[in-house]
Length: 257
Image (cartoon, rainbow, N blue to C red; front, side, top):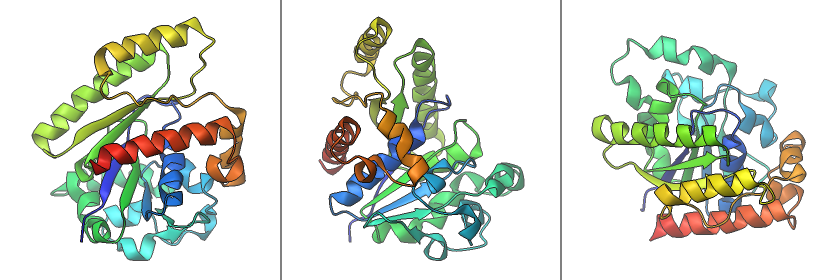
């Protein structure tokens, strides 16, 4: 059986909408008929609550996987989106890096924990915390592809170059198979000169990796998580849902070439 396509959404800069991008794309993949496992590796747990999972009902989390307390089969929870399951986050993840610091193979804990899931799902989507600590290293070590969501701001350009350097280091030290799948422009406003200028700058260096459709700035996209729904369920005919559907189609085409 073909193994999952494992995609990590990463950016050490916070506030770029990384979790929103990861969750909405995961939901779009599931709507296409593929089976998807979402792994919420961010201690903030925004993806967990954003897909409608009540945190007080969680009996196991990514933390339990990393410390070897549970198996992925016992931790994955089905969501209201058909075909989409999630391994939720919990605040315990905050302490995971300290607990694992002296453990052997600490960088590969997530990779080993989800090994059995690779034959059960078409896609595994991992949402990283906004840092380059051990949780992100575990995610990058487990993944085949990386998607970097960015804003059209100059600080985002700095973060983009730092993260691409990190991917090169990961390739050298922990995961020779990992590669950059794409750079995704998020919360784009084409009326702003700054947005256009930064977009042109990104195109200079990442033309072949830039997703063709930027995700527009949208109130509906921001509202959807508060209702525990991806944008494709909350406002399925809106500009946000249309943009995410286009990006997801391109992402799947890149993975499945």
